[in-house]
Length: 165
View 1: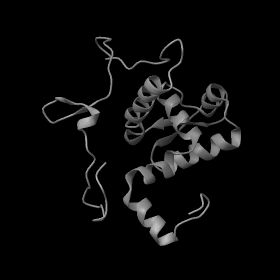
View 2 (view 1 turned 90 degrees about the vertical axis):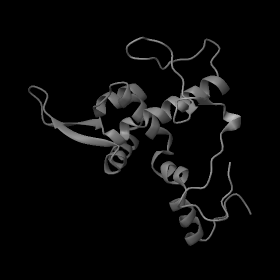
View 3 (view 1 turned 180 degrees about the vertical axis):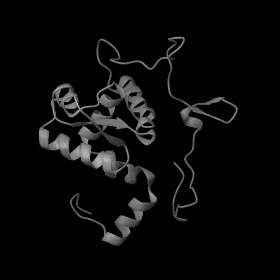
């Protein structure tokens, strides 16, 4: 099938509805979306802070903030700087803050597979001890499972033709 060919809409949408990755990428797959969330996790909350830190075009930033707010990743909170008109802050919701795991996993993958010569640009660390942390698969008792031992198995919404990864 040529790269530009599409599956029939009902098949394609059914796959997207059943696949958590496809549904997530529908919202987060555009480059600027995860970078905006990354900056929010680093403390940015105003339009001007996002614009300054990222250099994202204004129309793109407005569209992404609107989409992420409508999806429940951000809550739009009004505020009024002294002597100025009312503006909005964009505060991460619980759903948005949960994306820290995704961003740390992506950064960890990048550091291991697309490293910078000078090393990592950010390192997750415990807030109290400062000890370096890394993401891993662990069982219910907290034992780490190496990647080669991890299988992704069908969940309740999977079709019978789904294969384990």
